[in-house]
Image 1 (cartoon, rainbow, N blue to C red):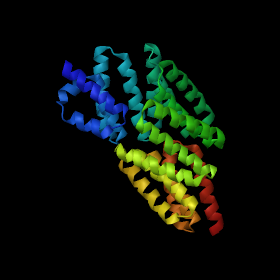
Image 2: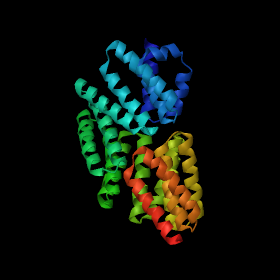
Image 3: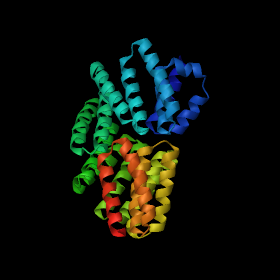
Image 4: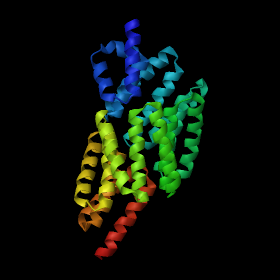
Length: 333
């Protein structure tokens, strides 16, 4: 029993630090039947696999956690597993399924009084609303999530919400408000000691700085985020950082370097099963190719990214790419 508790403590610590590769490696050394017997270990292992882009393996372990939680009548684990199952579906581009799982997770979390999982599931529902081009509704979900995290006293959760609020305000063109939220996200992530979230928040702020014209600082922060994600062995986080560094490079006039970075970001996103990130990098690359006078390549890239966004239900991004395609066609005509 003492050894099992010590193992659980180590695994939780690795999960909180965002060290997903180390977590998977540690549990790979343990007897599989011991992991399967523990809904918490199964869930943490499934979450780690999912973060590394191994959706199939992640879902398998989350389903084990759901089965064990059901057998034990553990509704708290059930709520958390449903939320992770939704996150896996979201990352795989299965938006309707993700929405269903997040709503189920929120319902169970309310029933058992689990504010942390209520915050996580409400946050994820906000991400979907933002993805579907409704940042106003997304802010409503983030507000519910923030209140839940505050009740639970979770600085990490609050940091996550401020990061996503920054994205929503940025999508509305409210750069000043977005940067304020991004500053809060970085501050709270650092206070919580969450290196992975701090890197994500730093990267998000860098993108907002590009839009605000503060390119030198954006460049610096994107490189800092890359360094942090490499230390954490998080290739998905690094891919997002590469995309943002490319935006800064393109604004500085280094278009060739920016193109290479965007193609690398796309490849990493695709290799780790992140269709939304791949589509976002593809969209940025389409604009860059247009600005570089490569109209045919820009059209091809824009069409590919549009197809991905359409599958994900990202209406606003589809509309932007339609405008880009129309603009290129008008010039060539």
